Length: 361
Image: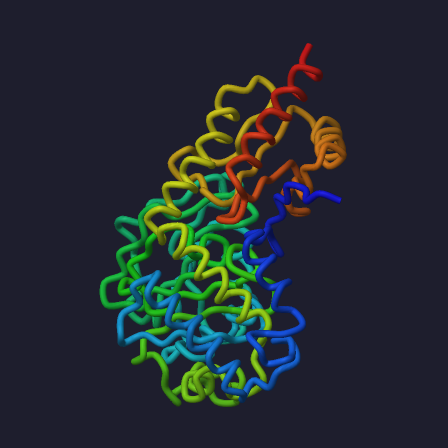
C-alpha cells in the first residue's frame, strides 16, 4: 500500500527519510545489537542520542548559552500546570486568549492563582490575533503567556507581544521549527513534539536558566519541577527515549534542508498555494483573517455542514486523510507541517478544484 497524504494536526506526518532510517535501525542501532526502544537510558549509546539531539536543536534555533533544553513527558497539557507551578511567585499571571489551547492553559492556571486575560479574540470565534502592541500588562504578573500558533483555529502570532521585564511564555507546539525564532525574547518555549518534530510522548522545553529554581509552589510534584529535569539533563527518570531518538533525526533532517530560514521559505510557499486557492474559490473559504493566518494549520469551510461532510468523505477516499476539522469547530483543516511535501498541497488543491466544479451550480 502506498502512503497517503496525511493532513493530521497531530500526531502528524513525519519525513519519509526519517521513517526509513529509523526502520533500518529498528533491530540494531549502530552495532549495539538492539533497538533504541530496548536500550538503557543510562547507556552510552542513548546518552549519545540525547546529547546529539540537544546539540543539533541548539544549533538550529541558535539557543543562547543561558538556556537549558529539556526533554520531558506529559504532553503540552502538563505544561499548562507546570508553568504556573514553577513561575507563579505572586500567584498572578497574564494570558492572551486566542483559541482552544490558550483557553485550556487559562483554565489550568486558574487552579494555581489569579489569571488576567489581557487580550482575547473570542468575540469573533478566534479568527484573529488581538493587537499586542500596547498591552496593559499587570504590574504584579509573574509572566505573560501566549499560544504562538493555535492548532485548532489556525492562527498565529506574526509579531510577539512586548512584555517589558515580564517573562514571556510561549506554547509553540504546532509551529516549532517551522521558522526562525529569537529565543532570547522568551523565558520559556515549550512544544509537544507530535505536531511538527516527532512522535507523541515528548515535550521539548527551552527555559532560561534563572527561571530554574527550587522556589516553586509548595507541594509541586517532583516531576513537575523544571529543576528536577534540568539538574539531571532530562534523565531524572526514564525519558521517552524512542521519541527523543526520532526528534533527533528530524532535527538533522531540518538541518539538511537548510535550517530554519529555508524551512520558513518552503512553508510559506506551501501555505500560499492553499490560501491563494481559498481566496479565489467560490465554494471554499478560509476562516482566519489574512494577517493572522497560520503556515501550519489551515481551517476552511464550504457553504454547509452537509457539503463539508461530503468533502471529508470523498477526500479520504481519494487519499487525503485527516482533513476533518477539530470537533469543537467543525469544517475542515489541513495541517501542512514541515514534513508535508509541496506535492501533497498541490494535489489537495487539485482535488478541491475538482470537488468545487462538481458541487457548484
